[in-house]
Image (cartoon, rainbow, N blue to C red):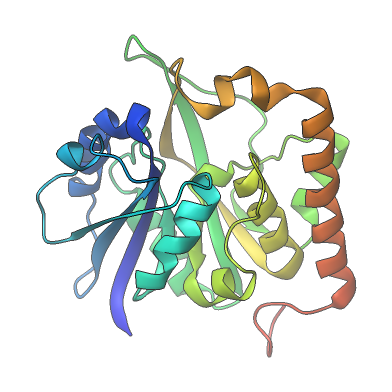
Length: 254
């Protein structure tokens, strides 16, 4: 397999204009000798509105598909993922310089680590950023720790799923993202933590754009009935994975 980090991005027309900023942030990433990145952009649907915003770069592959939400789009993109590692990057977000190299170093340096996350800053419409207290300590996150924190803190994890950097094989073994109308990335985070140790970097690894069109700002996202159902199935899946006892790595340290 090529020494390649695959960047996976789901996009729909409202978020397409932000691809240019995401691309600039990718171009500012430095990687160790012999490593490269390839960006898989998957439109959630088939329109004529996204393609004009996709940068012209041989390191980018753009595809379209039936609409099914960002989790479906990302999972479909995995069919073309030919690298050892997968990095999630939402179309409206940006990676600070050094983010990819830090993620890579964490997983290359410890074979017992299945995934990495990092500190997030909200990127506000005026260009300013806002951080938050409460990040975990730098270093390893043990199996089950995210689920217990999430359950005890109003279904808010101590690390952000939009910052995930994960081993491709582990992501495939878990089936990609959950088939949910929202919180599909949280479902993946908890499934990863149920089956493998993770890593947290206290350095900023994502600028998380806040804007009126983002999915999490829509009324449907906070509908109490749907939210309760999402949280219930996310928890149930993570706990069942824990009960099964399967984990990464399958031999050695766990």
